[in-house]
Image (cartoon, rainbow, N blue to C red; front, top):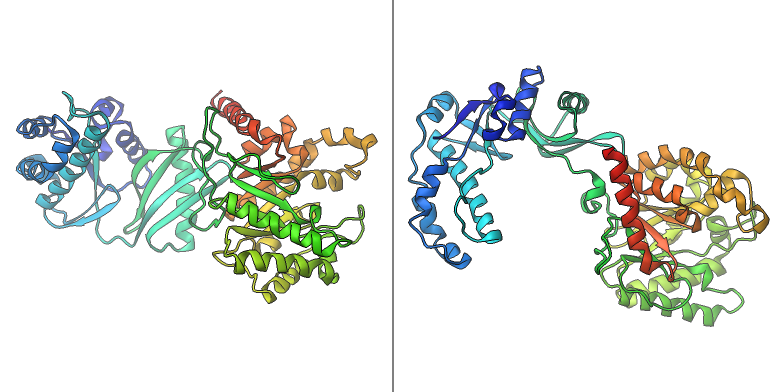
Length: 501
């Protein structure tokens, strides 16, 4: 017997039939939140089973070959009278995020297609088995008039903000604000966070409740607007980690292949006292890294020749010492344009102001190394000023951020991290972590990935903080790489347990 109920009438007692997600939508409707008017429809289990009994499903291939016949047989299932009654005054529907127009017969065929696809997936995963048509996912049918926009929204705990994806149409800023409040209120009513499909149809309305998957449990998004590098999953017997591992290849040769990217500090290779031989070595290192890791990003930091705290160094020195900047840009030009190794990206080092970033970007553009889809420009954040004025740097345009934690700690705490007698200050990180929180939230909100660099990142408290705040990757030394994935995996497990407790 087919079950159909208006969404607003669904209660906890109906969850065994209609599922917890449809019931959650009914709860929101009864709580007074704007929910699209519609019905929840359960699959016609008996009719589907009877239709499938006519076919031999001894193998998956037989089902694929017979799919056309199966569809014709299933399409003979008559439209339930109760569905006709519930939808008789409506001509437009929203089902599984897809708008449908037409008669109730066309709506019914669309529902049958969804359930048939679910059955197909079950056969491909487990083969044909008795009860394959049982407990198919109930579908919600939303009645619509004139949809102006639709999409998905959820509250992201990492960025402490609501993420709104507009899949069709556009939203007015006032509607964005309303949707933000609607998502927060819905989470409060349901006690746990969910993802919500929504529609703008004579006002904002929720149309579907979906499970919410925290960012830590999935791969970091890199497509959309983030333009962050795409790393590959670490393979092997170790636990997997969502945090990417970047191998520091500034010194030595490649010995570890199971990493997600490479980081090279050019000041550790290029030597002004040996310009030609060190330039050759730099080019050799860049080419070797880019070829060894063709599907991974190779982040190359421009030379940061430091003479100590407060001295001329980093980007300021590059801008005023062409004998230092030009050879490195020539090496990058050779690798990217002559060797066509486009996975080599640039990191701007030790910047003291957004104006320095803009100036060095102009110098890069003069060498045809401007920011574009095939060339990412990252920013090294090494002084507190960078965090305070982070929005200015993001407006200037960067594709990612490298948090140099050793430098940040030193300038924040007022000590030289290279001085052994002051090393104990490196362990006093509570103030630094509080200072970084707002900047990291802004990075997430701007969809700009960040990676951590420096020995301080291995401090247990700092590592847990980085995992909690959604760090994209970690730069590690060659000897640390083999064990780093497991270390990150364990840190992620601790975070999940803390959140669950």
